[in-house]
Length: 84
Length: 171
Picture 1 (spheres, chains in turn purple, red):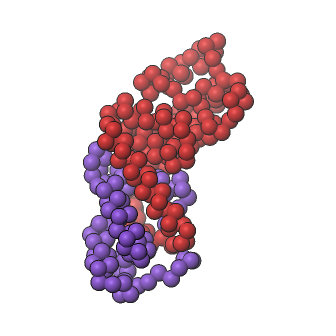
Picture 2: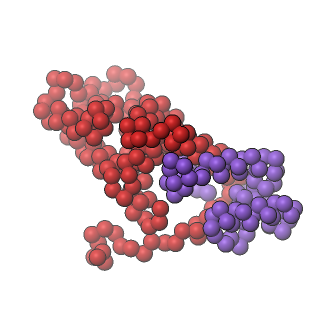
Picture 3: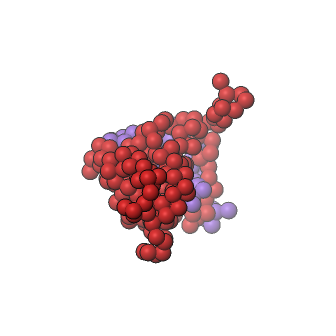
């Protein structure tokens, strides 16, 4: 059980709700509520903003495709024993 | 990256990378005598195969394991199967292994797989991409774990209905 109460998208300011729309586009999936991590990052835009940009830059296609990078991410998450 | 088969391949790479790292990094130096140049034909053939696969290099752990040649041969067969070009390329598999080593702080493993990535054509920019993903997901996962978030990404990918390879329902 989360150690914090995850706020519904409607509890966030307008700007954060726009970012949730971008997150839908990024994952190409229509979530009923934005993913928990998107809502966590939106809690502090001055942290979540640069973190999100670094993440997007790291995950964008380059020498490796987005799909290959998602697999690297899954492997790193596995080694870190992260179920999320 | 859809379908389960690629994820089985990735998981086997992660498993065998970790298996080699625990021996290479976990065992105190000299804890076990490995195989050397006086080894028999079976060990020489084994290391010829290993070096052919890795472009002249060999993972340090296999030299230690070869003190028991039959065991080392089976470990090597599993490693080779896991890392061979199949649905996933060797280039990607070495990159996954590199990410595993960096994440689990295996410097020797990271150096070995970095060498293999370069041999297989990954440039500095490509290595930087893998380091970036590894670093960002080392942040992401710890934030998620600290807050004990439940996964809500499970519905993104559909379940793969295909049967196990060679099973009664396989075509």
